[in-house]
Length: 398
Ligand SMILES: [Zn+2]
Ligand SMILES: [Zn+2]
Image 1 (cartoon, rainbow, N blue to C red):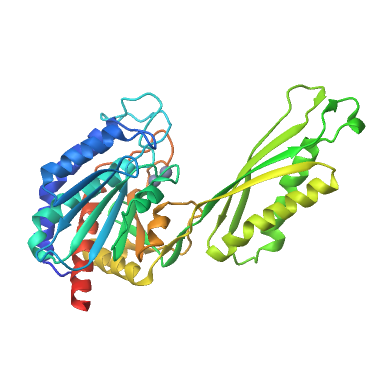
Image 2: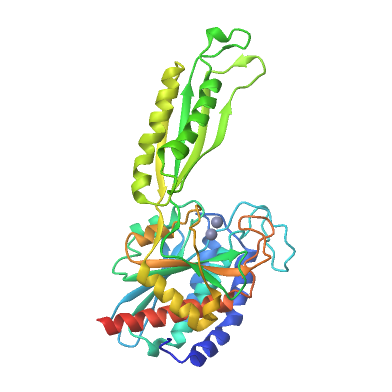
């Protein structure tokens, strides 16, 4: 089912693999937080220059980089491939020899691996550029962990004229050499709310003189649970989590104010749109009953990541051909985690898949997680073959 003889692509992948491994070790050693990926971006841009990409644009949406590899006839469809570059504020506890050199910052989500896969793919596609028609646009995105980078890239024209897009995320708990994907909702939307409950402070011994924002807040937290249990169909998935509750300063003072923060996650855009009204109605009703005032700030963050059916089919076909049919997992359930890759999917059909980084690996966002070197080879092979296959199919269809 592949358009290029697998041996040719494999030989190319093997040739670029040592460079990708080196690049990942360098990136892992020098992790940078969202919006601060200056060194990372400089390093990636330098590597792309050495590789010989056809164009290179830096400082896109902050520290983003967009490079292109143009196929044999200079025209045809444009396929985008995206990797993220930022790290997390966690102190690395693993003992790999390339461990983070920076106190309290590490690549705990494996974005070092995603960037190294895309660098390897860029190099492979440059060697294979006489074998495809069309353009591959490589997007190295900053600030994924704060759900801001994708929007910044798109606002600067990163998705202009793009016909399709793919991305992967390293996945612990899945063997190396396996991938997982599903059609439709792959990841949830992630929106946030800040609620301030204004009451009236008093001596704790005279509660009748107060309007207690802690009691009102406790009722708000409890009542919000009914949105999922009583207002949402049992077959739909929604998360409403209050994750912060701050109030008070002493044992004997009823405070005047309580602050609540939390997140709302959905798997359909329709449900997502009606959640602000539901949340505010509950907060308003409870506060009114208990004589408190409230302010609410509800912010839409990342949309639902919705994988396109035909792009998923392509991932499955390429996965079966490269890794074996048994190694392409059909994911029965989406994750209620969120990914700002969703933003790109609002501009072109695409798909994100999970790439196994090891069955026994610790979870993402923990101090001993490491993407590892082994997933690089299947990652680069998948991305390279997806580009070749997509552009071959799209050229034929034109
Ligand atoms: Zn993450
Ligand atoms: Zn991530």
